[in-house]
Structures are given as C-alpha cells and as structure tokens.
Length: 487
Image 1 (cartoon, one colour):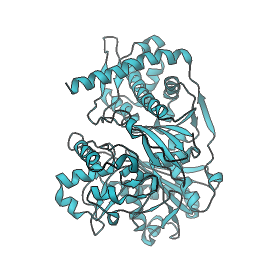
Image 2 (spheres, rainbow, N blue to C red):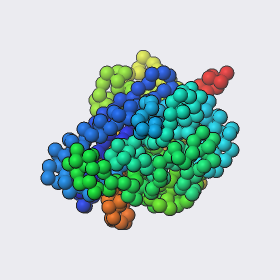
Image 3 (cartoon, rainbow, N blue to C red):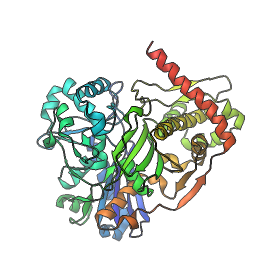
Image 4 (cartoon, helix red, strand yellow):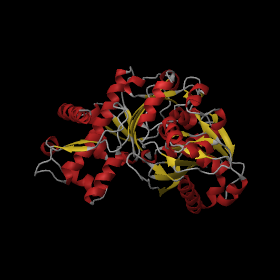
C-alpha cells in the first residue's frame, strides 16, 4: 500500500493505492485563498498542515486494517509558492502563491540584474515564480526578509512538518528561478542576485528517490510505521505526468485545474523563454519537460458559477443543450482573471465578456467560459509547436477531466485526439502515490504505465474550422485590450 498527498490551491487531496496500482480510497479537504490586496494571493501553511492531518485521520478510518500496510508516501504540490521560515523553523508570513502577481516590477529588476537567467533557469522572470517574490519581500518587508533562514516550496513545508527535514526535488525547484535546470542543482549566481545562498535552500533529491522518513511523533499520531519513507515528490504537473504515464519524450497531457497546463516530456533541457514556455526538470532522472501555463482555467468556471448562483453540474447540462448556432453566436470570454503567463506574460491582463446581447443567457456565457479557456490552451499549443515541440495526442487530467463536453471542445479546438483515463481527475495525488512506489524500490517500467483509457475524443473538422474563426476574434480582443491599457 502506498500513500499520495497532493497539496493543491483549492484543496489537499490524498489517496491510497495497492500493490497493483489500483486506488483503494481517497479523500480531500478544501482550502481557501486570501486576497488582502489587488494582485495578492496568499495561504496559511498551517492550514495546509491541518488539512493534511485531517486527511490522514480520515483515510485511516476508511482503510481500516490496510492502513498499517502503507510502505511509502509521495508528495505533490502547487508550484512556486514562497514559504519563509525563520531560524526556529516558524513561518514568518503567509505563503505567497503561484497566482500572486504583485511582483511585476521585481521581475523587470531580475531580468536586468541576472543576464544569465534565461540560459540557466530556462524561463522568463514572471510574478508567479518564487525568486521575484523574495525580491518583493526584500523591498517591501525588509524586517521579514532579515528573518529568513529557509525558503521552502509548499509541498516541502508539508515534508518538513512530517519529517523535520528541509528537502526539495528537481521539478518543483526548477520553478523558483534559482535552479540550474540543465545541471539539476542550485545556481549560486541566481541565488546571490536575490540576496540568498545555498544555506537558505533545502537539499535536493530526484522526485522518485527517498528524501526522508516520518518523524516518530508524526508516525505515532497517524498510526503509521516510523520507517515509512517519503519520496522526493514534485511539482503538481510533473507528478500528474507520472499519474498518466507521461514519462517518455513526446508524451503530453492537459491539466484542467485552478490553472490550465499543456505539458510535454522532453529527452533534454529545451528552454524557449521568448515564448513564455516553461522548461523544467521532470521527476525522473535524465528527463525534462516543457509547459505552457494559463493562470485561470477551471477556476474561471467556478468563478462564473458563483457569480450566477448555479452549480457546475447544472451549468454544464445547460451548455450541452445549446445548438451549434447558439454556440457560434455566443459571447467571447477572455479567461485572464489572474493575469496570464503563456504566451503573454502579462500580470495585468483582465478577464472579459464581449458581444453580449439580449439573447445572451447563462448557458451561452457558460459556453463562452469553456471556449475561452480552451482558446487559452490553444495559445499554449501554438508556442510549443513554434519551439519545435511536436504533440500528437493529449491526455486530460484534473477536475475538468470530469466533463465530456469540455473534452470534446478541447479536441475540436486543438485539432488533436484528447483521451481521458480512469481516475484522471485525481491528478497529482495518484502520481504522488506512484512516486512512493518508486521510492520503495519498484521499477519505473512497472509503476509508470499509462492508465486505462476511459474515452477518446477526436477532433471534428467542421467544428474546428468554425472555432478557428472565433479563435481569431479571441486573439484580437486581447490585443485590443492590451493596446487600450498601454495607450
């Protein structure tokens, strides 16, 4: 038995798999985001820990006698978040999250003072990454900056509470802008540009390796063996890749969670920062990956449902009843509720409905939201293709994988097959459990198999052609808004 824990933005999810890799049980605990000022997005690390502790108690009850058979734990987590610890290991301030865009000025500063950034870190400086956040803290909260002893990523804070060890992995650390991504080691130069050194960083292991063992008091509290190993783990998308067997060059998937990600495995380090494509380490040795990332995806649907007072299930049922004509004349939606990364790198981008008429209703507006997010992913596919990356088929994971309507729309927009897998909505939690298997000694060939395909969605040429006409309007809307904001 193996346990996977995924620290997301909206929830912590945990699941247990058996020796065959089948899911035995799972559970989740919700999280909230605090936005005390425009562009800010924060969470309490203590809330992460309390949610995780609750899940362990719940899963223990659900597993019964099988709980004691757990051999290893894997971790997955939201990337880029800055957890600042003092010399006593106490949290200094709320964690600044991946979708926080307050540090735009610090990004410009980092680009100027670190000319080696693109070559070494493989990415543009964006507000979501960790390094600009620390520059912001140094400028705006100097007393907090002086207290910093260690900077941890979100899932690594959970590891610290579980094991007492400050350790990270290559995939998650690649999202800090402090890692030499080709060498898979901290960059002393990039750390120094932010007033930090290796002493402030956790040690590094590969995501599939053993990082530490449970602290005795935590093992006793959770009813687990203190000899249980904790895998290195990884950033949520790289770990989700393990969950769908995306481990070989060319394997690709779309993650429809709070953010929207198009992920493809590479055999080598292939940075393409000019297009705002991310180049990171995979959770397996000698593997890297590229990603296009949009900051708001399924969260756009959640936002709209809250706005009109309806559940996602009911809204999707209403959207499914729309005719092709109603969809073709639906409003347009820009999904930039938290700014945008790929391809625009624009923290000030805003969401928008355009083309509302008296005929517009919540179904047509709901369709516009699904379509706008799909067009954002098409933007990502375009720049990945322009960087020389070939993608022939995508798996679909995350909460959005539960919607057949959205899966077909993505196939039509991207003009490629989209496949869903049994358990695909579990995302990083399943991948984390698989990393636990690897850390316990199982082979990647045995563990990292692609799960059974639940359904395949093929692109329909006629629908693709019509959607591309609307995609042209979508891009024009953003450019017009950009010109207006810079006028």
